Amino acid sequence: MKMAWKTDKRRGARRANKAMLARRAARHAFKAGMEDAFALCNEFLNSKQKFDGVKNWFEDLKPELARDFKYYAYYKYREIKYKESMFSKYRDMAELYREICISQDSCAEARESRQGMCFPDTKPATVHQAQVQEPTARAMRVAGRV
Image (cartoon, rainbow, N blue to C red):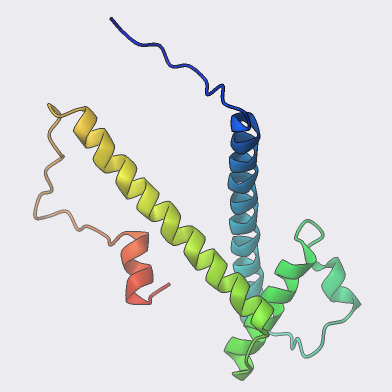
């Protein structure tokens, strides 16, 4: 007899599921904003212009990007270009981004291992010597290359 999946009927379970989905959406939005900030920082670094002060042009630069991410990109640019230290707020943003990426990588690895357990007849793909395997994103982060 096959058991059907049933929703959790306990008091507060629906609220907990909503909160979990809200946290997941917030993490996704934060990660996307940080990736856009990194792209903006690269634009600053590759530009011939000097960005010595935050002026009105800065607010009009990327209207879809939140203000904190714009400032993160600017201060990251200043840190790389002029070796200035960033404010603790922006250092904390970078740390949170790293934690989100690491947790997503570990969840993906756990999911892959569970799927391997669910389908034991499938054999892992063999890697030929001619194929070069690139390191995973997590391995690159641990090595300090990202």
